[in-house]
Length: 386
Image (cartoon, rainbow, N blue to C red):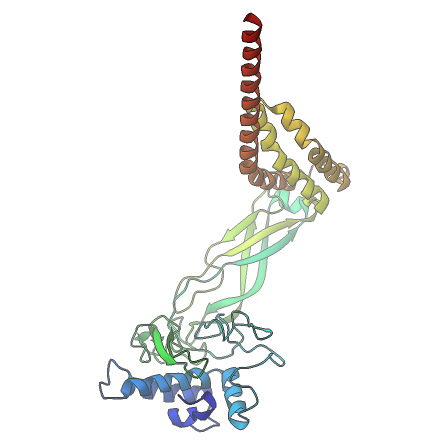
């Protein structure tokens, strides 16, 4: 098989070297529909389809296309593989920007020949039909201790993905919404000949047109590019209930990012922040350590080895108390307890399993020691009688 820079991908797709990404996409779709193995049974059609898919995989990605053009202009420039990226990453990794999700040698880790290749930087955008629920938006709302205690209503202005006003969220200007991907026939994968790289041969890749979903947007909306959503400024009124404390979350349903292709939106999560109730990092660490030690004392008391546990945990206990006091806790009044309780619970959750395992070992060792002592005493008594 000829090397990559010996193939004229522009001629294979029937486009000019100055063709835009959209022109390349349309040319590929046109040829893929005619050459797909499920449609065209002529001899050689499958091989030509693989060649067209390979050409599209390179020319549809700006970074791969630039590297290909450089290789054709100077066949000895890159030796078939890109070197360390100049002024940015190549976008060959498995991030959302790369339509193939290729691993080495295209990215997703460190190359044995040099620097790492960063993924997901490609600016190429497909028209895949991929409905997904929108993500939540987390917003930190700063309140005074009085506001948190009494409760308050706050209006918040923020940016989020909202429903596209042109296509009303479907991503398509037609009523059909989506159609079977003409490139992969709905399978979500295409075979690409990669024998020009280390003789790898044909490999099954994620379809670059539908991104593995098997469906594409019919007549994509020009405003949102087929996703069905666009960035927009939104407003929400958050009702913070009375008696709230630092760290409390107030959730407003459906006010997060709108999902793609008509799916429902996520939530707007307002996280209450009360500076007066926040602990110094040292005090917070101290309470976590106290919480971590608490299960040891509880299980030690239940197992009858409290004295041994107290001796082992004495130094960590002193350190925890020193951190709590050293963080300025004594001058904060009574507003610190909610944050302290939260830190204590986090520490206790981490210490339960370790405490159970440790106390079990101590109990077994104590039982074995007692049994050995009893056996030895019995032997001594027997010897005296004889």
